[in-house]
Length: 580
Image 1: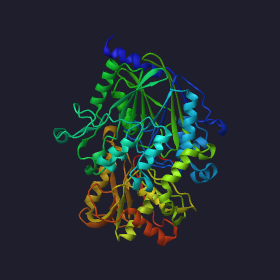
Image 2: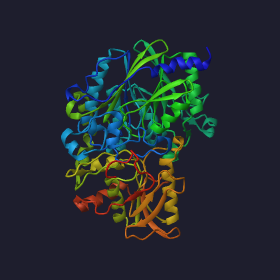
Image 3: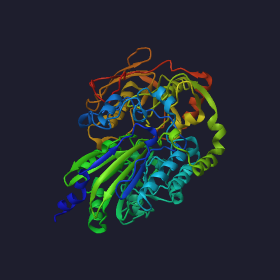
Image 4: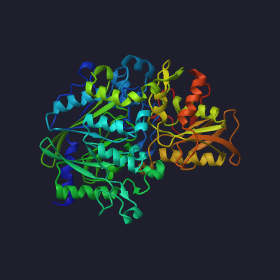
């Protein structure tokens, strides 16, 4: 057979029968999914070090442009429920959308938590039978809370080991720097996989450490696991844009990228020399990137995706020249656990059943051993974490393409505390939600700001420079070519309103920039701008200290000034929710 025909035999079978399970109406049955096939792969991603159950509001704005208009993952609210056939008003609707979030959160409680995940993972692995399952983590495991930042991810490695993670890839893990990351990986009992991280030319010339010096690959690219009597190849795909999205000083000897050509060669070599029965890509590309990659790279059966925090209940089937690939994404913050059940024969995936389970803490008894581990790990930080800084007058959340009350709070705090006219806050997609009426604790604040480069800065910028910065971020978010998207959301802005046309060309998306008093920004005029999380070294205080001082002075936080983003050219886009 020709190579193309061989690859068709390996991948086309994935199209034959896909059985999605979104959630049952009876809560008692939610996790009783039964057994299907001979291989079960559990997928967790983007937990951002959230060991305890959390509130996390899904976005009300997630706009798709170009070919992605109106397609998953760019659906929100009612459009999302209609597309995936989820009834409004119940537990699944609450888990997957922002609709009636405050009321539903009070009704159903927090989600996730590693003690609850441990119980669920053990149950699902037991249901698959001994030796028939894998647990994979898609990255962003070690960063996102105050304790994780202080311990440089050591707490999360212990938790992952107890949870039983077999393999993982990375993103924010790299911001701890090479030395710390290598130490964490020594402590990890599973495997760290990343086919797309290579030594730079200078580092290779100087014989820097690499898993495969001949190719220059810094980490192991693939692991072949014996599962359910067949051979499953798991390839790791780390976040491709680490040195661009984060300070390059953390990884000076390493180069990243999507590395599509290298990935295809790796898949071809596996198929012809190792003969795995199925190939899974454990990816931190972001879903739009994975969808394009699946259309161009042949021979991968399933992509288990992460990075963009999209909770997608049903796999997307992507056809490519030699068959098809299923693309999934499993949400964030421990809210969901993906269950990929495969019926795998000799070199063929016959049938697939995929279940994205919402992890409701009130429905799952926490595992005692994991609960004890979490208590021990976080005991030194308990008093500081519990400090009440203020009361939230309204729902505080971050996730959404343009703005959110939590980032507005951060921007307003920087404007006031640093005497700035305008404030910029990065469009991170991690960060938990605080309900109206709840106490905002130090733990809550650090869940929004705990990074290894948190220092604030104040600098003079012209209106033209501000527009250029915002145009650059908007192009990253709305470029019609997914390979030019780095994930994340639009930079948050305080002290200024503006308009955005997501579907416009680069340089023409941002307009109508006006200060809070209604004065239009002038391209050649200078403004005092505050920000944080700069890729250049800064000497200011950590942003958490600046915001904490603001909160202590407020007592009850009311966001009196909300900066607006007027959207242009996106009428009837299903990525914009009701009221947005």
